[in-house]
Length: 546
Image 1: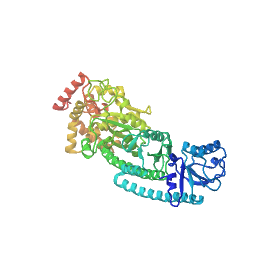
Image 2: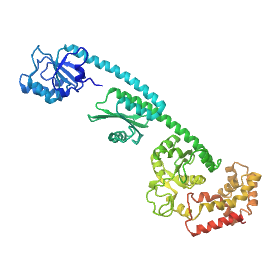
Image 3: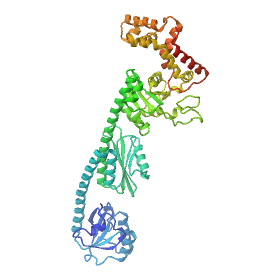
Image 4: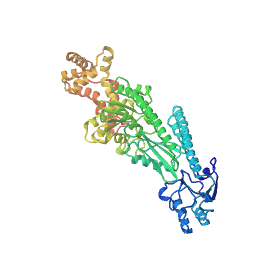
């Protein structure tokens, strides 16, 4: 609350009479000062109640009008005369000029020192009242933070500041506002936040009508967000204090939310890691935690991205609610994200299958994929692959990680954009390929279930090692004689020796199809794929041929 001229006249013990300038009684009185100078303006800073007995008042009417105009232009609050000392009455020309300028002219019937003391006492008392209001508001914001979180802090701040509040993200994006509707000053606040370059700062945008204070959030490093408060101009000191206090509460609130999100994603990421390592069936993942509906965009970012940075970037690039159903975990091959596929991509063909783009391949143009924005936000290279369901996620991770390991750029590459991979996938029906692999490997897995021993894993390690038993045994962590016994059992159970090229090819295809063919396809690409589907069905019914 400001001490206006009208309130000054009503202070206890004050005897004043308004002579002119009634339209300016709203002017705020910052100080009361005595001056008998012919031009006191150079000694004023605005908001003064200038008191005089008229010794320095010009003798000519034009001079007196100029005197009043200079005081009004300098921001003087009012001009007060003590009559019957140097002059008996205030000249009419001066009063007319005061009415024209809206500068109140008073007759003071109280001593000048009493007026000065009364004004000083009011401001001292107001400071105490303001401090009490600040303490009450701080306590209210603390209670609101405990009860309602971010929304409660902003609502209480806006109420006690008699204004409006806005919470922005670290890059100036709109998060929450009180009132909730879009306001014209929001854009100014966002521009001020973006202009800071992400550093911590505080500033005020004041156009003389409204004041917008923009305050960064965070205690170290880059700003974690921005708080903006709009009030009437000029900005009161207690609003500055309340904004600073609210910024601290919001920083703590956002830090707690970020820690909570990181812990949640760490727990969900442990389940995803178990699926990728083969320790948990993919179908169980959807039972143990909430997962977005298929299909998925699987992204692998270059190694070196922390879980905290990954979660922060994930929150910024996903739609509201999608972040809680996305999966992220840090792996040796990179940081893995399982995201809901962006189905509203540009360039979709009319009449095509859902999620299908030009060329008959799902996934769409790179510009619409979440992986593009995610890797750009993280500032690292990444690879992506589509997964039609959770069971395809491990294979999609391997293909995306292979793109990252291949290097050759700082951006985002998707399997669909790599022509050889896309052509290979279009030549197969994934479901048929899975049935083929299941049929060929069924005898080995049934033998494992009855007698133990990792025949499938041993066979794969041996073939990947180029028939080098020593290397395969070292990778598996077993003795070479154990490896040889398993290989002999695998040959016997699978129905043929590994030296037979045809038998060896069938085994290798069954073992490596998930890696050779990128997941995510949803239909046959041509007649050859349909014929492969029929043959796979026959193989599924009849079993493998030696």
